[in-house]
Picture 1 (cartoon, rainbow, N blue to C red):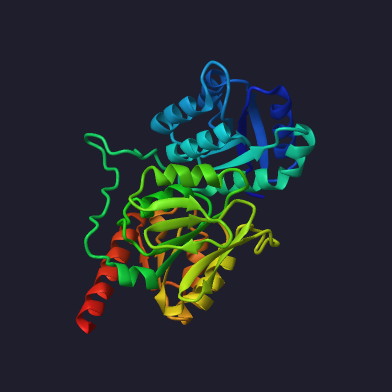
Picture 2: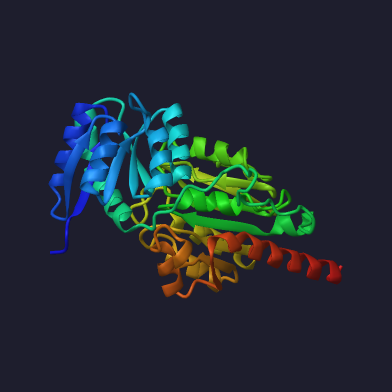
Length: 362
């Protein structure tokens, strides 16, 4: 058997530390090598024990989890799984943690902690396993400052109304996807075609995710609502814990959000969204598959390609986890495989070319 994944648990709650250590130690492929009740203790423990992964509470005394994470990712980048509280503030702080370089997060229950964490045991250890093999990156700045390399928004010229109303862009992502989605959306011009997005995320976090992106992007970003018309210049994110797909109402695309069963163990599922885009939009669609573990969406992305869509897949070097992109490529769904920072630019160039051809026909 290969070497076990060595985990340090950092949480100010003795109960949570005990429960997480027990959950980890029940696994044949991992062990909890230490627990710390605050980041200052954790800092010395990390230096001494050199863990493969740490789990980190968002809110702690002496130094909160976000301050500690920021310092850790600057000085000693390593895989971190955040343990978040399911509150509005907890969701906002979790989004910040993912920006700083955390691999993923688990939302701990507000009541019934012992039973709740044990019910989440499979999810917790799965995320630790993913984190152990993920490509860790240093935190990138969200807002451009002197000397930084934050994305420069794409100029608005070139994508004109008639084309934008016909076209639709579908994005799928999982682990590492919140920052990958930001990287794509921040580069899209304000008159971009409508964008529909499924990011694997639990209930309670997608509202904060959409709000954060809305403040950064030239397009409007929101959580999708059932029955709403899908408009150019807008991006719609699948609500956590719901299935999201698109339908047609006359000449318009509309959002369908429903409490349907998981697909590929996911809710929301990329497969559900992409399958609807293949059926409803066909050659008017563009697909983008970003970083994530597993194979969700790969089959449906091939259906999109067979229906005439043009698909972009993130390359291995720029992925946090090269699972979903690898499967999309293996299914023959990719037209182009590109570094994350080149996907939006390539898509905008292709859209402008289509706009030029439309004008010549007119």
